[in-house]
Length: 364
Image 1: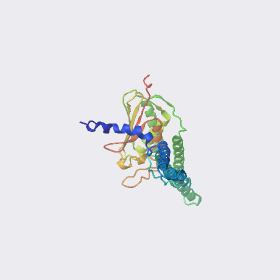
Image 2: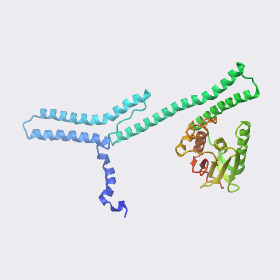
Image 3: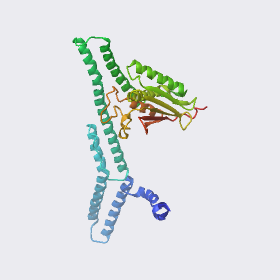
Image 4: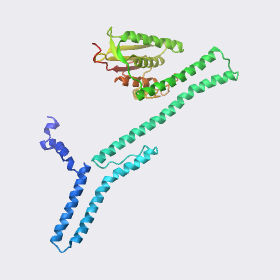
């Protein structure tokens, strides 16, 4: 027998009774507290008048006692009601000065208590946003400094005559310039995605030819950018003729970033596999990118989707020239579709799975 059945009827009915009593509970309603203030003041005055009729005390003295008692009760109630408001005012002024660590002590269960809880949640959100802003500025400064310093060193060597402006030296300068341009472009993309200024142009398309073209472009980019050319790319789409509903350009960004990361972390002569399967709803898509690299430890699987969040291998961050923004952009693009992206369990290497919800009209 469940616990709900064993409980007495009066205990099961108590929550409903408690909700009905809330309008007259002075600890759970400001309106009730003010109402009880009036009732108690009137009751005290009435009691003192009755005492005056039954004793030798004058009405003037009784009136003075009634006023004093009413003022004391009013002061007590007003203090309890004003304390959280004054505390929130002080905390608001501190937050205006940039002190986001202030919190309000919640002692009431009424509307003021709800307001204090909401204020604390807002303060926590502002503190997190301020921390993220500072981290973003620090990370951007760090990431921009590296390619700029490398490019400056190459150019200084050419100007000082230490090295010749031969194709090899210019190729080094070009790589640093491309890295700098790639970082700026990714920051702009991420900013647009976060601010919601990138509208989705979703439509229906055949998955296999689309992914074939994306992987072909990825291979060309690898060769042109002096990247890994020893890694094989494999496509597995089932069933034949699979259709999906998504923004092709945004999905291109996602797949390209996932494949690029998988290629970078693949062993020599490794293989990257892109698997596409239908989702649960019509037009839905389940896409997986698998590599044969060292994989991502469980404790870092959320970190890699953060801005500048880069995983480590044996405690060392790989020096592969990445910016740590690719997976963050992929997550935001998938979120725009209403889908999900995460690191899935894999016996070998890393498996990243993304799901797109699709559209009910996909089969129409």
